[in-house]
Amino acid sequence: MSIGILTLILSVIGALAWLPEIISLLKKQEIFGKIISRYGNYNDKETFFLFKLGLFSKNKTFDLKEVSCEIEFEDGQRFNSVSRNMRKVIFNRNEELQILGKEFINNFAILPSDSNLEGYLFFSFEFVKKTIKMTKTTFLFKSFNNREKKVVFNERDIDERQLFYDDSIWKKVIPLTVGEGQAIP
Image 1: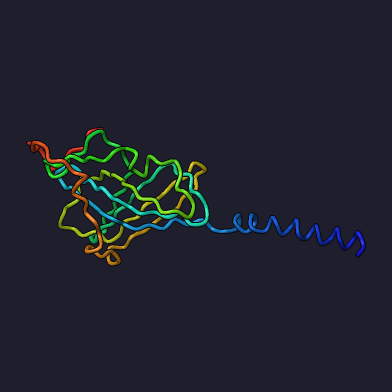
Image 2: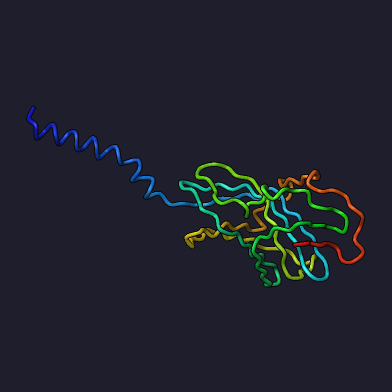
């Protein structure tokens, strides 16, 4: 065997060693999600939603800067909000939220690749009538390098019987005298 053929074989083997890395760079990043639970609180001034989501970043890690949400209603109204952290959140006049900040997705810096992640997102929207039905909820994940990924949930695809409502995240408190809910920044 000549040195030229041996060099060619070793070069091909060396190039093939880089093939998995090249393939991973070419793979498209996608974010998939599932609504685990959704809590709503409606009052005369604003509407709060607390979501628990399961997320999966396929193929690549997503560097998370912020999360926003758009909710569409059957009467055509659309409301947008950026996820928030509140010191204290009270729903339905007497239920204080008992979730730590480390459990909120908007406090994460990354969504790891190819691994399931669960967490909460809190949004405050303008006043929404409780009687008007939602048709779509869209979460927009923004990265530090200004990339955006959307996860869209159509209401017709959500089976309310599969949502999980965890009563342990709420603590009963003395009822508020004004309004139905309160969020204290």
